[in-house]
Length: 250
Image (cartoon, rainbow, N blue to C red):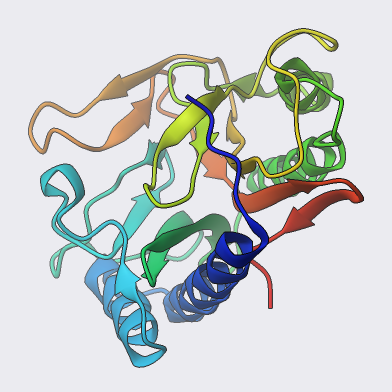
């Protein structure tokens, strides 16, 4: 069931989104060659709690951290550790979520540690643009297929793959709600978008191919089948009568 949010609930989600955004940016600033993925997680966790929020991810389904920190071929759900050091040229995807008075904000960003390859820079730029195009398509009266088609068409036009096994989602008083928000689809098809819907839109774009696999050792980390890098950008978006409003921005 899709839950439409009241104006008061959207206010709470905007604050949750603000906290999650600031935590995400703290994590991005912590990405430096030689830093550990736990350093990134610590920056995220401390920011969320200092602003009066709670980490959405910590303990969710048994996940042991406040942030997912995924490096290079790790698409999503990377578990931070004190042993994993970030290397020069790595691209690091950080996913954060915050709870404020029972409502969630969820966002992600991919950043390079120092200098990286031109193709990695292009991958990050294209993925971020995919998110912008997806948000622009999130208009009342449009359909979920319009969001997915915007992502897929732009990514493939640059020779990149689109992750299909993991998708965006509705969000609100629970981190994952209906509907699913795929990064592929046919324009004009799927669930119609209505004011009051809130969506976590999150393109996951691979340098090569669509395929992914789950690490059986930790039960969480998703890798590209190609072994090449992936990028991930995400915002929480409210559908309003006046168009999409990004809740995970100041």
